[in-house]
Length: 64
Image (cartoon, rainbow, N blue to C red):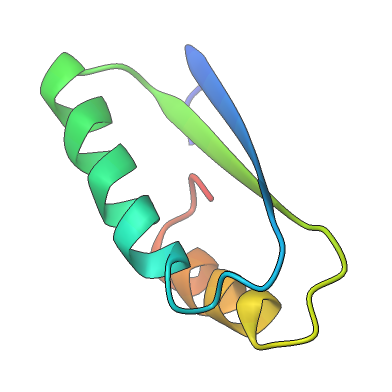
């Protein structure tokens, strides 16, 4: 990954059903503005599969 021009830090707690949709919306906008980016999700103590969803996305996108 190149040096990010934009860094997003997103807290998430019990958001397993929303993480993928949020990620897709964010990436859609960032690609339109053509900036290098990084997305940092912070799992704030979820007791669902939020962290698993984040891990799954991170395997597909090195900017996460």
